[in-house]
Image (cartoon, rainbow, N blue to C red):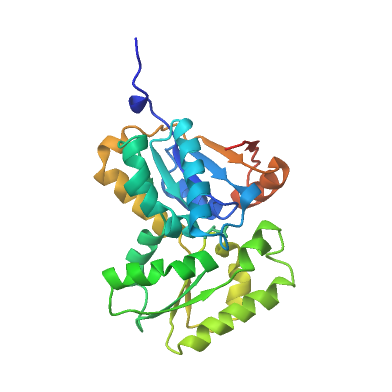
Length: 279
Ligand code: DGL
């Protein structure tokens, strides 16, 4: 009997350049614990933030194809840089050729959809990697959904390396965090909401809080992405049917699994054993 791989239930794939997507996966897991997940961190090639459009596209497509080879029908790019630079091309150009029944979703749209209900002044600040900020993806998406909102942005090229090198809660991080928070706030006095437009940044939230006034809200993306995924699966029962429901999570990294295990175990508050893979 020939089994159609399209009908075999499989985990949801979650991809990031490194550790950052774990902040998204932990929110997804707490909202949707019944599903199984495969997390892939391309730690060997992180950070993606300063890389060219073509390189981020190529690396992201590698990762998506690898997750498809593990059976995933649905992949979440839990990375703003990959969402900004690769998502559209993968959705429009690659998916129809690879397998038009599979889906790849990003993190920018779900975040933008939530902004209007959070800001009171209508002035928001976005912190992100150089790649995300230069792509202007947030401005473009916000202008489509909420054109009345004024957006200021700031690229923070040192922040992902601080996280990937486990320096995010050390005193040295203060200098780089303060520098970019001050730059952002100096661009607009009326900002009342700051969006952490990089999935690594929730790990720096204690530092960021030190340098912003109490009346400014900081938005991480994890819960918006989780809510949006729940809604997507509700609206697409044909996809929901194909998701494995064993509450299992497998972790993979393209670099040393020792570092990954330490970091992920800390974040998930349980022992995590990742496998190293070549993608
Ligand atoms: N977590 C990725 C993001 O959300 C970090 C990108 C990088 O590797 O620089 O943009």
